[in-house]
Image 1: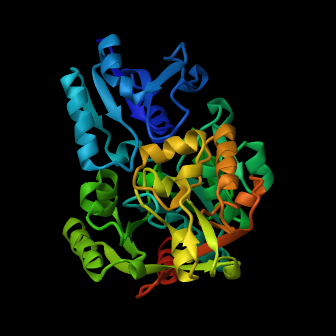
Image 2 (image 1 turned 90 degrees about the horizontal axis):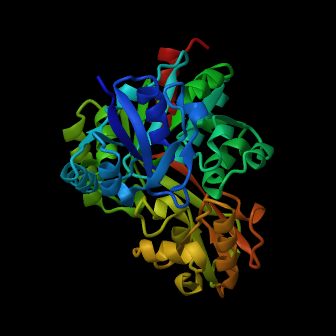
Length: 443
C-alpha cells in the first residue's frame, strides 16, 4: 500500500514537531512539502534530510501557503495537516474548505498525538491568544520555584528561524548564548527576562532531544507555550491565560478553546483595563467549556524606569511584535504606560516606516499609534532601527521585553516598561505552585 501524500501547513514551529513525532517514521504517510504562514522570510527554506530520517532521501521543501491549491494538484496530495496556531475557527474552516475543494482531506492532529512524557514534573503555561501574559507568568513561576530551592528549566515553544541543522537543541543561559545562536528580536524577547533571573531556557527543533537534555538539570520542566499553541509535553499542571480585553476568543479561537477545555487553571489576566461585562463573559464561557477548571483573576502591574521622560513628552511607543500582529491587539504595556504617566502625545509611527516595517502596517491595519518590534532577521532589525530614528519624538517607550538598546543604535532616550502579573484573588500563583510541589515533588 502506497503512503498517503501529505503537506504540513505550518509556521516554523509546531509543523516540525509534528513531523518528527507523527510522520518521520510512519510508513502510512509521505510528507511532500511544508507551507509557511505568519512568519516573514521562511517560505524558501527546506527541512533537511539529515533531520527527516532514513525514509527521506531529499530535503523537504517549503512553499508559501498561498500556493496550497497549486501544490495539492501538482503533487496529487491526499491530506493537508494544519500545524500552527493563534487562528480563529473561521480561519481554520476557510482553510478546510479550500483544501477540500482542491480534492484533499484537511486534518487537525489532537494534542496528545504529539505530546512527549517527561521523567520530571511538567507545568505548562499556555493561553487563549498571543499576548495574554504567558511570559510574566512563567517568570513568576520560575521565581517561586527557585525560592523553594527547586530548579526550574524552561522549554520554550519553537522559534527556529535560522538554519535548522544548527538549531536542533539550543540552550540559553547567558547573553553570549543569544549571540552564539544568532537570536532574532522575537527570540530575545522571550529569553532575556529568564536569563536575567538565572533560569536556563531550551528551544530548537527536536523537542524529544531537548526534553532529555533539560531533564538532566531540572527538578521541574516549565513549558512556555508560545503563540497559544498546545503543550508539546504532557503537563501535570496546565495553566492557561485568557486576556480580559479579548472576551469570546476562548470560544472562537480553536487552539485557545482547546487549551481552556484541557486547563487545570484559567487565569483571566489584565482585568484592570477591561470592562466588568467582558470579564464576566470569559468567566461564563470558561465555566461552560471546563466546569472543573480553577478560575482566578489577575492584573499586570506596569512600571517605567524613567517616567520623567514620558510625562509631558512626545513619545514613540514600541510594543511586542507578535502581540500586535497575529495576536491582534492594537496596543500593549508601552501605550498603557504612556497614558499612565501622561505623555503629551503618542506619535504615529506609520508615516516614517520603511521596508518590511511599512509592509507590516499595510498588513495589520488595526495598528495606528504603536510600532511593533519586528525583528525576524538582520535586515528587518536594521529597518526597525531606521524607522525609530526617523520618528520625531522626545523619547521611545519600550513596551517589549527585549532591551532594544543592546541591539539597535537609537538616537533618542529609551524608557523601559516592565510588567509583572499579580492575582487579585486566592489562590495566588504562589499558592498554586506550593500545592503542586507538595503533590508532585519531594523536596
